[in-house]
Image (cartoon, rainbow, N blue to C red):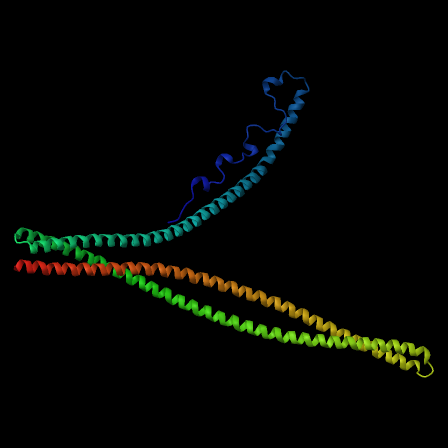
Amino acid sequence: MQYTAPIERRLVFQPSQQIMPLMHRKENIFSPLRISPSTQQHFSPSQPKFSKGNEQQQKRQNTNDPEKEKEIKILIQHNQKMKDQINQQAIDYENLKHSYDKMYQDQLRLINELEQISKVSEQQLKEIKIKQEVIKDLQHKLESQCHSQNKNQDETQLLRQQLQVKDQEIFKFKAILEEKHLENQEIRNTLNTINQKVQFMTQQKDQQYQIIDKFNKELQDEITHKTQQIHATSQNLSQSQQQVTQLKFEVDSLKAKLHSQQQLMPLQQLQQRYLMLCMENDRLHSVIQKEYELKKQMELQQVKQEQEIDQLKNELKKISEEFSHIQQGLIYEQKNMYLIENLKNQLNHYIDENARLNVIIRQQSRI
């Protein structure tokens, strides 16, 4: 059944709140001064001219009235559509809220039913204990009557009637126990399905742990490999820097020798040597730049992998919380099963006591 919102929520705009168009008002504040015919005769001769201007202005307004009416009607229709949309949205929101409230009430009802079942089981257990005490009292009475010599047939018949009543109660308890047994079977079936789900979730959890361990191992191997590469690169950089300093020293020495040995070495050879040194310097600079970029990329990749590991850890944490919640539900169901088993054992004991009393009564009747 569809839920409808109250009237005060559905009607966002009341009819009394609608804006009255200007054409429906009693007065037009923009019209010129209107004078009744009874008062026109008291004005000066220039007054007819004024009244003629009034009439012309009113004729102009009458010609524009249909257009204004159309615009006003369009605005009213648009306003009505907007109000209908807002009212429909309010109704949809109330329906959605009602459905959520209904779901919440259903969950509360299920919880209350489970609590009621546990209370009923406890109450039945108390009743069985009371019946057991009554049977013990009857047993003591029968023993005292067996030892006594002046017993009477009426009392024996009364005891038989009481035992028949107890037998009827036993049949009732058997029927109740069968119902509880069926409920217990349903609970066991649900517990089996829950156990299957839990096993499936644990398998998924173990698989995810294995994937994470494998990923961590690969990441650690890659980090060690990259660290070795960085170490080798740093060694190469240090060697390259030493070579650069050595080459700079050689360039300085060559420049010093250039002034002193211009006659021994031609200028062209010195220029070639200088160009070779510059090219070597550029090459070393490019190598250093590439190694720096590689190191930066490795750092970014390591940060990204750490973020992925944190995300996987959070997912595992959520799965473990769900697993613990399911385990709590299983513990609660196991408690109910334990109470039902105790109830069944006590009822069997009650039946045995009743059978023993029947044997005693038969022996007594034979005597």
